[in-house]
Length: 448
Image 1: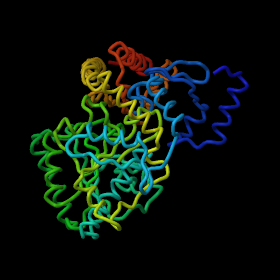
Image 2 (image 1 turned 180 degrees about the vertical axis):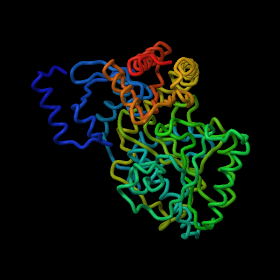
Image 3 (image 1 turned 90 degrees about the vertical axis):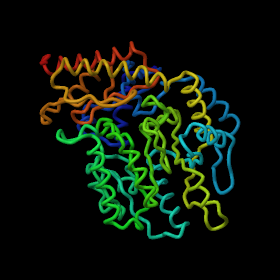
């Protein structure tokens, strides 16, 4: 943007005065506002014209990169035809119907009926409501409890926050929704040394079933889980057999199984959805983020005909949820274009192939630098966990060095998170890891 220094400074001051950022960090804000003005592929530019490689795909959204003319054209055409009409009571728009059809083709198993919302948080909130009303319609109104897992994130809304197993997101807003229960996180890396992976899985499933029995199965509406936990804990893979075991237990006790694939869906793991790696399908799946490519906000709660049909039995049984902009007409048009890019450019396949290249490079980096405790992930979702004194704030210092040297890096404490756009090339992987290694050398004095 052709702005004078005075105009830039005015915008930076105004940002701090008039806006509360999401998950604001006052220490970072004290350094000044970061304002972005342009995007291109895997890169973004700030208000001062500096170029940055974005290793976190604009908060896990821009799977096809920035500035895609195909999407711009789809949005322009739709805006000139009908910018918006609500999906309300008995009204639909053509892009919304076409997007629902595409999802029915893409989603695993019998997941084929969509309820459109504006974000992943709303999708999870809706999934919980859907599970509750499903049981009400089936004559079991006393099923109101939800099982979730420690260390998993699902939303910052009050309902979604109630099933989020991370204290930081909950502590200021308690008491939260009653009846939310937590079982252990299920991470292959947590398997005790003296226990086989099979026995570890059995232990986790036993804990889940014992919790259900203790609470009374007839009081439990659903289990909500991220089959691959997100960036907060470094994309830890589940132990073998765990997801199938959860599916079996939920079936046994009539519990609705909800998979939150807001972060992991739409190619990021090398398959369209992470659960496909384990051939397990939930009763409800929530989607967002990469679903739209970041072009216009949209999310969805997708379920099976078995669940959807209970809301279609006749007057008085309709699903009681909605919002003004859920399924926004232009957002649907943009999302259709985004999904076409993923398909036509074989970006799911690229995530698998380039992801293996990235994994190999990360493992070599781990051998070189002894302070790398763990490398975890799959596809193009990876985390590097550092074995350093948390008081030193090494993760934050590495992030800051990368920023000063032209790369946006996400860190959760001493977990460095890499989740680039699916269009990333091997050359860009080398660039990304070169920046990280440069930060290692600067921060640690090249201690190996």
